[in-house]
View 1: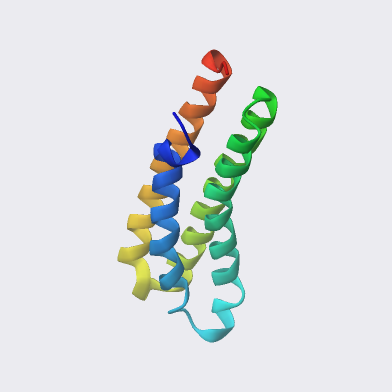
View 2 (view 1 turned 45 degrees about the vertical axis):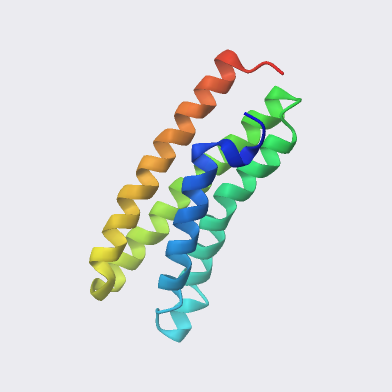
Length: 122
């Protein structure tokens, strides 16, 4: 692995961010700046924490800490999407796909954390 860009969890989180962002801009104006903003920030935080952790990969504990932050942001993103799904049934189909995708991403991040804990060496 030469870069964080080689990590599947980075690639997937970026792709999901670019898909979920435009959807949040279709929300009613008041919600776009409330729950929509929280969703955009939590979704953005996933790959941002992966990058920051990778930048500190020399220190295994720092790398793991930021991967844990990325995992938590992924779970937070699922929570925001579930709230939107309940509040805006017209987006239900799109949101259900995102819930599935972010749950899968969360599992992948968790597995990567376990890998780093067991095997990470510079």
